[in-house]
Length: 165
Image (cartoon, rainbow, N blue to C red; front, side, top):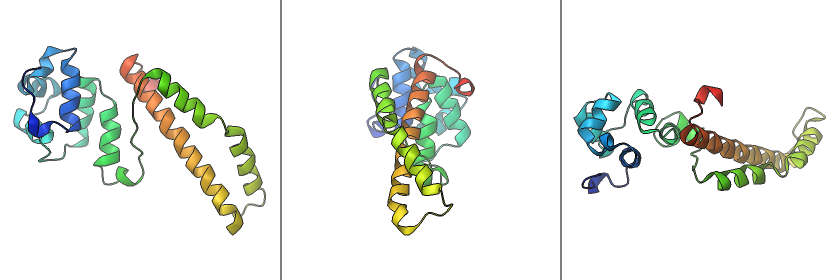
Protein backbone atom coordinates (compact mmCIF):
# COMPACT_ATOMS: atom_id res chain seq x y z
CA UNK A 1 0.00 0.00 0.00
CA UNK A 2 1.29 3.48 -0.76
CA UNK A 3 1.44 6.13 1.91
CA UNK A 4 -0.43 5.57 5.14
CA UNK A 5 -3.30 7.86 6.04
CA UNK A 6 -2.11 9.01 9.44
CA UNK A 7 -5.47 10.56 10.37
CA UNK A 8 -7.15 7.17 9.77
CA UNK A 9 -4.40 5.05 11.29
CA UNK A 10 -6.53 3.52 14.05
CA UNK A 11 -9.84 3.34 12.16
CA UNK A 12 -11.05 -0.26 11.86
CA UNK A 13 -12.35 0.25 8.32
CA UNK A 14 -9.07 1.74 7.15
CA UNK A 15 -7.12 -1.05 8.85
CA UNK A 16 -9.35 -3.65 7.19
CA UNK A 17 -8.70 -2.08 3.79
CA UNK A 18 -4.95 -2.06 4.49
CA UNK A 19 -5.09 -5.73 5.43
CA UNK A 20 -7.01 -6.51 2.24
CA UNK A 21 -4.43 -4.57 0.21
CA UNK A 22 -1.78 -7.07 1.33
CA UNK A 23 -3.42 -9.70 -0.89
CA UNK A 24 -5.22 -7.48 -3.41
CA UNK A 25 -3.47 -4.34 -4.65
CA UNK A 26 -6.81 -2.87 -5.76
CA UNK A 27 -7.48 -2.01 -2.12
CA UNK A 28 -4.30 0.07 -1.91
CA UNK A 29 -6.19 2.93 -3.46
CA UNK A 30 -9.21 4.37 -1.69
CA UNK A 31 -10.68 5.23 -5.08
CA UNK A 32 -10.46 1.66 -6.39
CA UNK A 33 -11.59 0.22 -3.04
CA UNK A 34 -14.64 2.48 -3.04
CA UNK A 35 -15.49 1.31 -6.53
CA UNK A 36 -15.14 -2.36 -5.58
CA UNK A 37 -17.12 -1.97 -2.37
CA UNK A 38 -19.81 0.15 -4.01
CA UNK A 39 -19.38 3.23 -1.81
CA UNK A 40 -18.67 6.76 -3.01
CA UNK A 41 -14.97 7.58 -2.64
CA UNK A 42 -15.57 10.65 -0.49
CA UNK A 43 -17.98 8.71 1.72
CA UNK A 44 -15.39 5.95 2.20
CA UNK A 45 -12.82 8.61 3.10
CA UNK A 46 -15.18 10.11 5.67
CA UNK A 47 -15.85 6.64 7.12
CA UNK A 48 -12.12 5.93 7.37
CA UNK A 49 -11.48 9.33 8.93
CA UNK A 50 -14.20 8.79 11.57
CA UNK A 51 -16.20 11.81 10.47
CA UNK A 52 -19.28 9.67 9.76
CA UNK A 53 -20.58 6.30 10.91
CA UNK A 54 -21.19 3.88 8.04
CA UNK A 55 -24.55 2.35 7.35
CA UNK A 56 -24.85 -1.35 8.22
CA UNK A 57 -25.09 -2.19 4.50
CA UNK A 58 -21.78 -0.40 3.89
CA UNK A 59 -20.10 -2.30 6.69
CA UNK A 60 -21.44 -5.56 5.28
CA UNK A 61 -20.11 -4.64 1.82
CA UNK A 62 -16.67 -3.72 3.20
CA UNK A 63 -16.51 -6.89 5.30
CA UNK A 64 -17.29 -9.01 2.26
CA UNK A 65 -14.95 -7.19 -0.14
CA UNK A 66 -12.05 -7.04 2.33
CA UNK A 67 -12.66 -10.57 3.67
CA UNK A 68 -12.89 -9.20 7.20
CA UNK A 69 -16.10 -10.61 8.71
CA UNK A 70 -15.00 -9.23 12.06
CA UNK A 71 -15.98 -5.75 10.79
CA UNK A 72 -19.64 -6.74 11.12
CA UNK A 73 -19.11 -7.81 14.72
CA UNK A 74 -17.05 -4.71 15.57
CA UNK A 75 -19.66 -2.42 14.04
CA UNK A 76 -22.43 -4.06 16.06
CA UNK A 77 -20.42 -4.01 19.30
CA UNK A 78 -19.05 -0.46 18.93
CA UNK A 79 -21.34 1.63 16.76
CA UNK A 80 -24.82 0.14 16.50
CA UNK A 81 -27.11 1.70 19.13
CA UNK A 82 -28.80 -1.66 19.77
CA UNK A 83 -25.70 -3.83 19.53
CA UNK A 84 -23.55 -1.78 21.89
CA UNK A 85 -25.54 -3.10 24.83
CA UNK A 86 -25.93 -6.69 23.67
CA UNK A 87 -23.09 -7.71 21.31
CA UNK A 88 -19.65 -8.65 22.61
CA UNK A 89 -16.77 -7.71 20.37
CA UNK A 90 -14.59 -10.67 19.51
CA UNK A 91 -10.88 -10.81 18.94
CA UNK A 92 -9.84 -13.03 16.05
CA UNK A 93 -6.43 -14.49 16.81
CA UNK A 94 -4.60 -17.54 15.46
CA UNK A 95 -6.54 -20.78 15.17
CA UNK A 96 -4.58 -22.59 17.88
CA UNK A 97 -5.21 -19.80 20.39
CA UNK A 98 -8.90 -19.68 19.47
CA UNK A 99 -9.23 -23.44 19.84
CA UNK A 100 -7.62 -23.27 23.30
CA UNK A 101 -9.95 -20.41 24.32
CA UNK A 102 -13.00 -22.41 23.21
CA UNK A 103 -11.79 -25.54 25.00
CA UNK A 104 -10.93 -23.52 28.11
CA UNK A 105 -14.37 -21.96 28.23
CA UNK A 106 -15.98 -25.41 27.86
CA UNK A 107 -13.89 -27.16 30.54
CA UNK A 108 -16.42 -26.54 33.32
CA UNK A 109 -19.54 -27.23 31.26
CA UNK A 110 -20.56 -30.21 33.43
CA UNK A 111 -20.32 -28.08 36.57
CA UNK A 112 -22.39 -25.36 34.90
CA UNK A 113 -24.99 -27.88 33.83
CA UNK A 114 -25.26 -29.33 37.34
CA UNK A 115 -25.48 -25.86 38.88
CA UNK A 116 -28.21 -24.79 36.45
CA UNK A 117 -30.19 -27.94 37.19
CA UNK A 118 -29.91 -27.33 40.93
CA UNK A 119 -30.97 -23.69 40.59
CA UNK A 120 -33.90 -24.44 38.31
CA UNK A 121 -35.34 -27.45 40.21
CA UNK A 122 -37.90 -25.40 42.08
CA UNK A 123 -38.54 -22.96 39.22
CA UNK A 124 -37.41 -19.99 41.31
CA UNK A 125 -34.05 -18.24 41.50
CA UNK A 126 -33.72 -17.33 45.16
CA UNK A 127 -31.50 -14.55 46.49
CA UNK A 128 -28.84 -17.02 47.62
CA UNK A 129 -28.84 -18.64 44.13
CA UNK A 130 -28.36 -15.36 42.26
CA UNK A 131 -24.52 -15.30 42.45
CA UNK A 132 -24.30 -18.86 41.10
CA UNK A 133 -26.80 -17.99 38.36
CA UNK A 134 -24.76 -14.90 37.42
CA UNK A 135 -21.66 -17.12 37.22
CA UNK A 136 -23.56 -19.38 34.81
CA UNK A 137 -24.55 -16.41 32.66
CA UNK A 138 -20.97 -15.09 32.65
CA UNK A 139 -19.62 -18.51 31.63
CA UNK A 140 -22.18 -18.82 28.85
CA UNK A 141 -21.24 -15.36 27.56
CA UNK A 142 -17.58 -16.41 27.49
CA UNK A 143 -18.45 -19.61 25.59
CA UNK A 144 -20.58 -17.61 23.16
CA UNK A 145 -17.88 -15.01 22.53
CA UNK A 146 -15.20 -17.65 21.96
CA UNK A 147 -17.50 -19.61 19.63
CA UNK A 148 -18.25 -16.43 17.65
CA UNK A 149 -14.53 -15.69 17.32
CA UNK A 150 -13.88 -19.22 16.04
CA UNK A 151 -16.75 -18.89 13.58
CA UNK A 152 -15.43 -15.58 12.24
CA UNK A 153 -11.94 -17.08 11.95
CA UNK A 154 -13.38 -19.94 9.86
CA UNK A 155 -15.32 -17.55 7.62
CA UNK A 156 -12.22 -15.42 7.09
CA UNK A 157 -9.51 -18.04 6.78
CA UNK A 158 -11.07 -21.14 5.31
CA UNK A 159 -13.88 -19.31 3.52
CA UNK A 160 -16.78 -21.11 5.13
CA UNK A 161 -19.99 -19.31 4.32
CA UNK A 162 -21.60 -17.62 7.30
CA UNK A 163 -24.89 -19.40 6.76
CA UNK A 164 -23.05 -22.77 6.82
CA UNK A 165 -21.58 -22.18 10.29
